[in-house]
Every structure is written in C-alpha cells, then in structure tokens.
Amino acid sequence: MQAINLAEKLATFGECWQPRTVGQFNGHDLMVVKVKGEFVWHKHDETDDFFFVLEGKVTIQMREGNVALGPGEIFVVPKGVEHCPFAEEEAHLLLIEPQGTPNTGNKATAEPRRVI
Image (cartoon, rainbow, N blue to C red; front, side, top):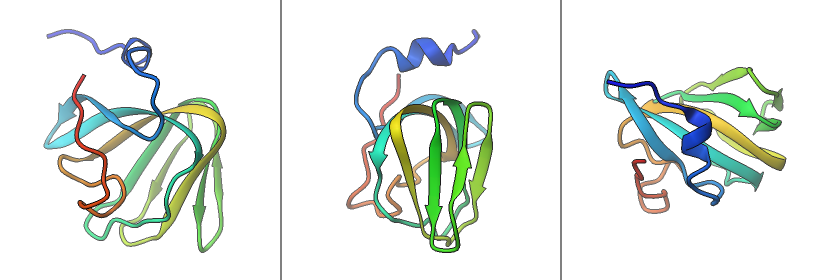
C-alpha cells in the first residue's frame, strides 16, 4: 500500500476531458482529469456527479444556474440534473464516481476507462 500523489498522476498526461482512474473506494473510481473549455451538456440518471477542484477555476453550468468553483472547493450535481462543466483556463479536478459511470452520461459517447 502506498499514498497516491495526485500532482504526479496529473503530470503523466496532457489531454483534457479524459479522466484517469488513480484508485478505487467502495466500488467507486477515484479519478483525476484536466479540463479546459466547455464539456458537453449531459446528466447522470443513476448517480450524483462529484467535482473537487485541485487547481484552477471551473464553472458547473446548469439550467437552474451556474456554480463557480476554485481550488479546494467541492460541488455535487444531483442525479438527473443536466450540467456542463466549463473552464476558461486549464483546471485540474478529482472526480469520484461509481465504476463504469460514463462521463458523458451515455456509454456510446463516453471516454474509455483509463487506469494510471
């Protein structure tokens, strides 16, 4: 057993919007992701969507209003709520989702699971 250094894991890749699984917790993937620009509008019917900002600023756009997040802040989008993450500049996030949750809400358009 050893500690997971999130900064070291983030340094191993450059692509945005392609989460990397760095560990597991009770059937959930612990993932890091780099984001920049706008993602796609989507929702998760079966699970909430957890965002923890490690570096930078991210806005979680929702039809009901936006939530701005900075380093050290967490936001949970309730299941079934349509949302679209956006970052003007590159930002780094920690995501926690049940293993197998498609990042776009749709398995056909989701990024494949990548473990680092």
